[in-house]
Length: 96
Length: 100
Image (cartoon, rainbow over all chains, first blue to last red; front, side, top):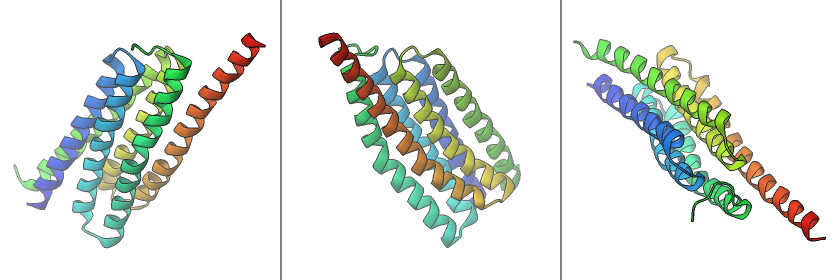
């Protein structure tokens, strides 16, 4: 039963990573691309890592996975904010 | 289909999807057109590489890959911030040159 749960988490993670990549490729300007990469990308890798933690079922692995996910969720908005400010200042392909 | 074979299949499919998204992000990194687009694509590739590390850790049973993912999460953030600051600084310098 654990295998099925891990498989579902992995498939969902891969799906969201693919959605994020398609968004980065297809959306028209920097701010919308950033929106796809920060939200869907973080969700995709977080789901894949949660699947990893369930599969191993080990305290050391779980702690590492929680640290990675916390760090991703803390830093993704900060990086996106700084990059968005730089893009608007440079006026680099930003549609307002 | 037993749960074990379903898991093996899911790991393979997830690896294919994640590597495909890495390739798509690389297309955006090559095409640009601006510096900000390239930094967004690079940031996206770092986050996708963390997912690759997670899937490959299950595939090979190698726990050290999770340490690699942790370091990637730390270093990728620094790279994004540094490149964003570089873009702003470069713009300010160009303005100074055109004004003075």
